[in-house]
Amino acid sequence: MTALQAEAVIAADGSVTLSRPLPAWVKPGKVQMTLLVEDRLGEVDERVAKRKEVLAKLRAANPFRNIDHPAGWQREIRQDRTIPTRA
Image (cartoon, rainbow, N blue to C red; front, side, top):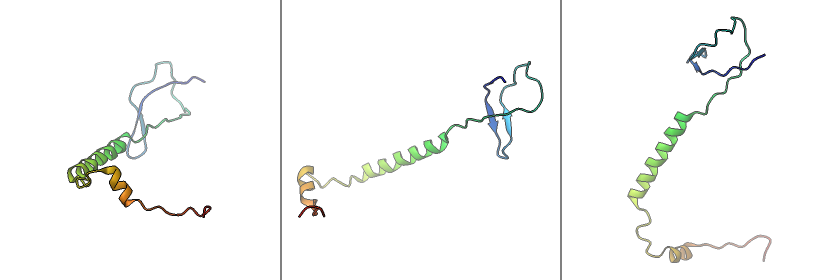
């Protein structure tokens, strides 16, 4: 058994087509194949673009513009709660 590496295109109907011809010594017949499918890079790119868009809108809204001293603001809004295992 010989391992060959080739690129293929998977069509919408699930058929697989090699993008380059195999070497001439490969004879016609049945083969066993292992397909390594790359992650959905297009979907990742879309999610990254959406996140960038949302972050840009958040920056434009500037929700923390009224906070002059962040450490002081954090102390003011902090709500301590008791830990159940400690009295």
